[in-house]
Length: 159
Image 1 (tube, one colour):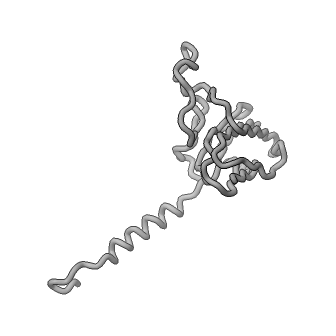
Image 2 (tube, rainbow, N blue to C red; image 1 turned 45 degrees about the vertical axis):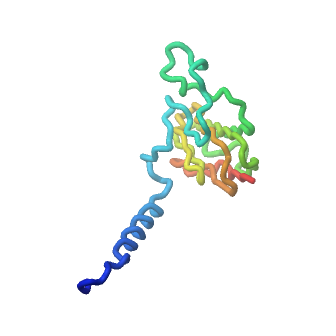
Image 3 (spheres, rainbow, N blue to C red; image 1 turned 90 degrees about the horizontal axis):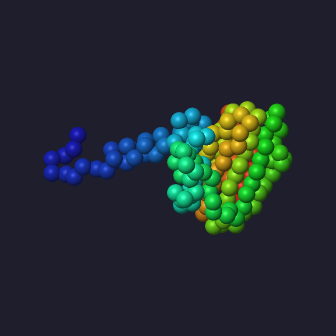
């Protein structure tokens, strides 16, 4: 109970903030309702500025964003998953900070692609490619994986 004339302490506020931060950190990448996961009919999730224009849309297409980027990427990484086998074999892929990176994955089973650290993802329909495109603006080592089959596709090194 506060003493009359005294100021309230910041302890309750600190406890609430600590609780909220703990809750945020406890939520992992395994959530299916992750808003960063794009559906096959939408443009890939991207941390880069939009690179499509209305001129690149074909008549009758749902939106200009449904077309892949027409901007040249600095690094294109293509991975195939068949019978739980990753091709090329899992390893490290190094890119330079600031490069525009496009990751395209084709899987024989429906899955989700996820780029850790950038929190980007895309749905992988069985047999059809899924893609993310982003500016590599954070340095470090980042796993690129599938969620359902829990396969590490490669480790992205940004220097």
